[in-house]
Image 1 (cartoon, rainbow, N blue to C red):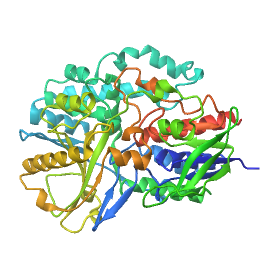
Image 2: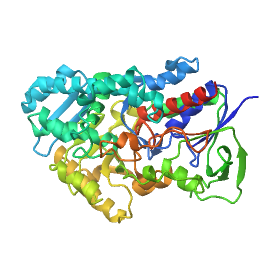
Image 3: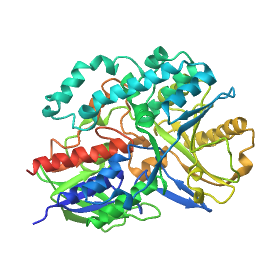
Amino acid sequence: MLKSAAIVGAGIAGIAAAVRLAVQGYTVDVFEANAYPGGKLSGFEQDGYRFDAGPSLFTMPQLVEELFRLAGRRPEDYFQYIRLDETCRYFWDDGTRLTAWADRDAFAREVETKIGEPAGHLLDHLADSAEKYRITEKLFLERSLHRLSTWLNRDALLGYLNLPKLEVFRTMNAANEKRFAHPKLVQLFNRYATYNGSDPYRTPATMNIIPHLEYNIGAFFPKEGMVGITNSLVRLARELGVRFHFNTRVTGLVTTENRIVGLKTAPANPLSGALEHREETLPFDLVVSNMDIVSTFRKLLPQARQPERILRQPKSSSGLIFYWGIRKEFSELGLHNIFFSSDYRAEFDALFNRQNLSDDPTVYLNITSKHKPDDAPPGCENWFILINAPNNTGQDWDALIDRTRQNVIRKLSRALGTEIAPLIACEALLDPRTIESRTSSAQGALYGNSSNNRFAAFLRHANFSRQFRNLYFVGGSVHPGGGIPLCLQSARIATDLVAERMR
């Protein structure tokens, strides 16, 4: 008889776990409170403009392709993408502009020509990033950190022997200041701390592995937009027999002494998200939670032993996103653009120490219509504007949003020499409150716990439960962390553990 598995949440990690379990022979049901799959990795249309709702940078496409090959399919039949010639365009208030070319030598020449930073400094930094990744990949990113076998193998030995190279006891900013002569290049590489919602003045320099993904492996663009990742994997999952139940909220997990025996569900109103009264209990042999780990324990397992040390860790930053349809095309802008704050340290002080937004925020601007013209009407662009925001601790968000919107408009108008406000044809908004309500992310944090201390990697929950033998966890709030690549890795780790236990 086939064994049954339930996935709580149709985020990208939940979908990947569903595919992997279906390949293992499980009958799989995925329960999602929203009316759509993907969680943060979703999309929407408004007034003729299409927007990706959440993640906008695509790296490590091999992790997506792996799922199709695992199922015996050709990835290109489901999902297509291009490699980008440039990674990002950078803008500063003093008029300095840099293009981060995908070709490392071209990028190195760019920084030497534009700001006088020796090309060798940049190339050495990217080589160091690659070395850090090589040391940590097999140990930290592909295995559970919570099993003894992980620490007793050749990959672990490589990590032990190269521990000084990881710079665990130095901050990202300190390492970057030591490497680079020009403060603008320090700021440029400090921004990679935000890729896991952390502070470059606190997070360990080990996080300098992050640029390796963009510059040594490459940055890519899915031809159907970022939501194309979700849509292609949902199609694959359905072909494998996975059943998706949308507008269906999981309200609790049913337990015995040391096992999950099923879950409780209730229909959710697709407009308000409110639960209707019909609650149902469904039996399952295995449960995988793609729900935020805090919400999983607090809401689904309130009577279970709570891993308080992990659940109470400081949370990562959140985001404030403006989706603007713009009645103009800007040739000086690319797919990815950054408009830097004049005082980066003050911006992060506001973010993490005062749980506030700086009046001079760094602005990330993504425009998918640069590569997918039908995402906007002719002569127009679809602007996705992300501001790093504190997680939700009860701030007056309406006031913060209004103030920040005006600051962003002034900053972009000044940098582009054009008044932006009259060009906004339509607008939508996502803030920490709505991130929290739509995705069950604790406090609206985008990446679960923050990485603002050297032990952060060990303060994420394991991909399995020690209390319940058939309960597993995937997604950005558990090991190995947030972002599309790490979420996909979490699904691999968890389902590999399932297969190992069932041998």
